[in-house]
Amino acid sequence: MTWKRVATAAVLMPVVIALVVWGSTTLVAVAVAVLTAVALWEYFGLGEAIGHRGYRVWTVICAVLLVFQSARDGAYAVLLTKVTTGGATLGQGTVGRSFASVSYPLSATLYSPSTLFFLFVIGLAFLILWTRRALVEALPAAGISCSALLLVAFPLSFAARLHAIPAIGREMLLFACGITWAADSVAYFVGRAFGKHLLAPHLSPKKTWEGSAGGMAGSLVVAWAFSYWIKIPFGHLLAMAAIGNVAGQMGDLLESAYKRSAGVKDSGEILPGHGGILDRIDALILCIPVIWYYLVLVNPRIAG
Image (cartoon, rainbow, N blue to C red; front, side):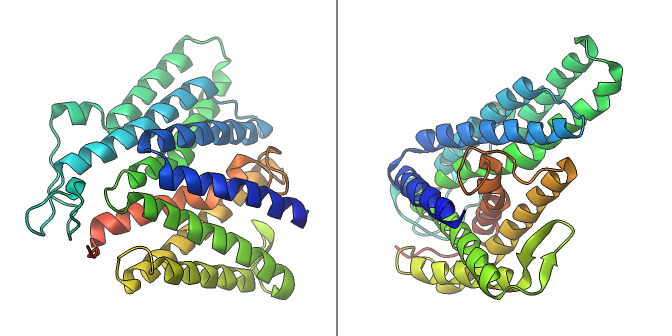
């Protein structure tokens, strides 16, 4: 199983790196939309295993729209964001301290995530009221559909939003992927070699505190390596690596909870050695938004 895991990672990682570094935000959004659709399909499969048959097609449509809206919103914010250094805009290549001072007109409000969520609710209402499903399915179907959009699609859409940040967006999305990959790999091998104390036995019988600590160390090492590439103070990179790692481990355990609830080992079989797409991206689902919010709320200074 280990060689399959390593071989799959060796094939996928260069593809992801090339896409993030050289691809446009639109292309990244397309890739994220595809991943989101597949992950949602697997999520709905978990729901069906316990008798919760959701509205797959409508949820996937709204999820894809959410990803592209997020990419558009990120790009639009770039045009309206002012930085404090010299009065230049971030889009001109001058980097500075603040991502604040963004104001949105009516058009941006109409294309906001809240509007898309409302559209989703309206569509869900029509499906519940005018389809021929048994009424006993109404609440489970609404619940699994809403949770799919909220727990998977919404946080994953931040990948396109993060990529759209000027000057450092590509690097920071790759940073999020890097700390997650390092944490996953180091935790796996450290846990197999030294793991004795179970981290969450009711959720994942193989995850250990030793593996978790090893994963954190792996993320911090990646932050150190990125400090030679990303011109953000090393302390901020360490902080983002640490909170990103914690968020990623939470995402991993959260997906384990879904699978235990459904009584299955993996969300799918599309990736040899890893399981399904949801198994592969579970940590990124929470890690990427955490990195985004750190950049927006903390505003670390970026060297020119």
